[in-house]
Length: 318
Image 1 (cartoon, rainbow, N blue to C red):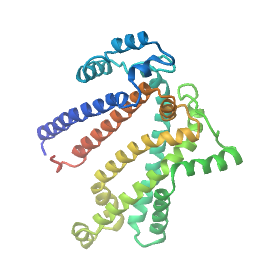
Image 2 (image 1 turned 30 degrees about the vertical axis):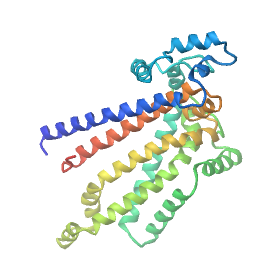
Image 3 (image 1 turned 90 degrees about the horizontal axis):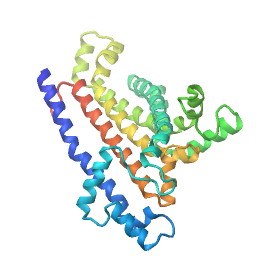
């Protein structure tokens, strides 16, 4: 694939994201309107008068057609205005900006652990199929898939926080204020998040490598006298790059959603715990804003994964 063809394909992928983003914003917009309570009542707070409700309905354009409301809401979103929190009366964007760093830290930290542990285990298992290494890696993968997040989180708190006292049991420290303290506080949540990611990376990488190593191409290389280690590192891993990128993208998106559970267990003041608190208290503006941000991140990660395909494998054409 020439450079011009690659640029054209990247442009095509970027254009394909536009309708997806519009759908994401539209369904996020509908969230407030699909609630069983009148949006004007939600925005008015407790014990509003009829005149206050009418004023709020007019102020937020709730008396206008749905299409017009969506257009105005989308325009506000493009300017960074995600409405106002019913409980705190502060902009939803401000709430998300203050809580998202704690969520991002444990997700990125968990991803680093998952890749650092899962990739070597997957390679180790594929290099020695049927051996003790393969058995151990497969057992780790099965355990990671079977065990739920909240159980792992509670065991980690019990052992490493309450009994050994190595890490704090709850809470988070801003990375900008104390980087080492923030990493220490995020370690247990990140480990809890990473376990299923380790399992997924091990399973997918092992399966892809075994498929490559059993191909006719690799048999030819062996027949030419190339060593097993050279085949694995020079040719095997090069051919599973797309698989690894795909798994990392999928795992990242899943970890983002799993923060709702992890942040609740560890009492982390992030967006995951914020969306639960907002849901319980019917602060749908905050729920709407967080879901929109999460959805946009998922779409962006998927786009970056697609673009990585183009860069890693010139044979990708669509």
